[in-house]
Length: 464
Image (cartoon, rainbow, N blue to C red; front, top):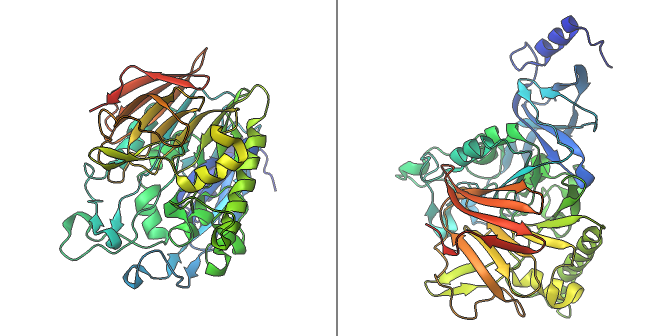
């Protein structure tokens, strides 16, 4: 039911929707995520079982319950038995599809950022959570803003007033309980329920969630045996389904893979979002019965990427978590190339080009570095922005060992890289995009110009 838009009724409606109003749901977080074809989806997390109402251009609107509050029975997880417990979600996940004509929207005390017709500025972050992992004996100091700077990065990046935010995956890292005597993560929530999601993502990301709509790629830390339950409750853009919730491991073979989709960035560009959450490290062999089903899934998805990238007059930015043509440090003087599972599939679709011709740039995380790579071979420029919170990796060798390449037939022309914490800002220009890599405090590491499939930066090699 829509109420008349009188000032008095609007004020009364706001009061009723306020989290402080008696009986109204306590809204814990609210944001906007962009789905297929740029559909803007208002999302909210509310304590308890009920969804809050919202205001769209002064009219009261009911949000739809996406996933109900409750505790999910224990399922097998990537860690050992000590890292396993039921996932508690004492919150309702709620949503509402926003009309393209909306000018103003709010949920409780949260004012929602709405999409712009022609976005000019994109912030890119990735690998933002705080690592607590028994299997690696890795314990980041989550209570120390210097050791885990995602809150600072989100605040500084929000100050750039982006029109769009792209997260390239791995939102959640608090898998294991903090050991006794480990002061830096003492009393941190852990596991895959709401408390860990709230601490690892929603609280530190709040300024950036309020600044602009988000495009969200799924990382390997959001696969079903990890934080997949929260991924589908909160972040995935498609309708919530029990069979694709990661609650029942019998459905993981489907829920660990999702169809690609495209988000328009104005009339002449788009972001193609690809789910690489379950991409392994080894090449996939379709003749191997153990690989055949996964190979077929990824092949169909890369064929869809090709169809999306074929839109005439549209520059495509490919976004997934795992680097395709990026580099990962192996030792002080050697590197790994791109993800071999995905490359083995892509080669059967596009040959040695790997990407379809419509893809001008690829954006990734997973490797905890900043990288900007230009190729002498005909391959799309590549950026890595996996340095937004989790422990950064060792730096790449500088200079790179002779002949270093992310994949067969791919020749690097120039690379700029850093293992400083930070984020990217992409600004639309007359001829292309200016991409600046920033440190956590907002100081510039390097400035790059992206034109067609080429990128040139004002510095090459390692940047301190």
